[in-house]
Image (tube, rainbow, N blue to C red; front, side):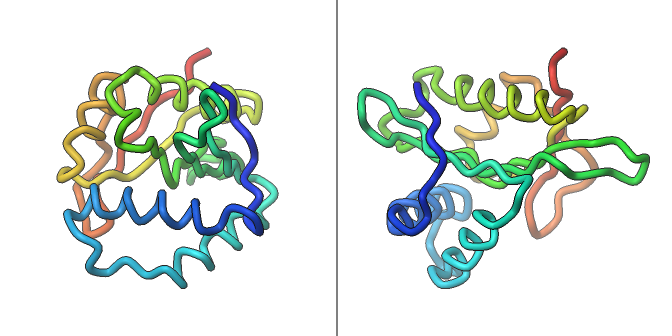
Length: 156
């Protein structure tokens, strides 16, 4: 698999389609999904110097998208990363490719000297929950309206 930085000017529609599908899987419907807000988020993400915004390519097909930050500092002064989106097209899920996405993100975070990474998930995304459990993600704190915070140390 190859990871290519997103060109937001050329790939905005594809990015929105991937986000829309991820939203539907997580929330069970598209109620509340806002295309304009999503496009604005992508513009902001693309402008952040510490952001990772990539498409996953396999056999010349764009099969996924990852969005993450790699220059965050917690209350104790420890550097960490945050995954905003971890996405594979439905027909590519359950084939071990999510592990490759995670490995790529972790290599980027390790290079940035991050100690750990966080993300949020919604329990309705049962396939995502199973992936996080299988790969050693641990829940942190109580679930709130934004979902359950999960965390994993960056392997040495």
